[in-house]
Image (cartoon, rainbow, N blue to C red; front, top):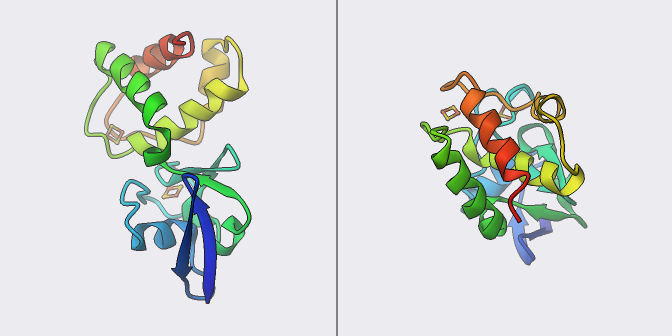
Length: 149
Ligand code: FES
Ligand code: FES
């Protein structure tokens, strides 16, 4: 099936199979930062933004992206760089496997919530798991990034 998806502001033509998920469709055309891990909707590694909302691409059919704005890490370079600086300054940079999905969720949170508390942040990030860390450095970094202009 031929479909068109708007990814990071650019319309792309894709050929997908029936029942193909968005994560696979995006990887096939080179969006390698859209990663997968659990493939059961439990870890958040595959998160992309669909009309600004963090969305699990491993369990969202590619066809559901038609007519929507899909953002991957590549489409959020300015905010990604700002957040990466804060993460590094808090010593929270580790293997990075979960970083694309985690970072997109944090960017969406910053747009949605003003001055979130640590509890608000924890709640928003419930669906993003990281195998490397005890989360404290990440939490400090997210709190700090929320104040970055
Ligand atoms: S790979 Fe999609 S939620 Fe884990
Ligand atoms: S930084 Fe390694 S899985 Fe999160």
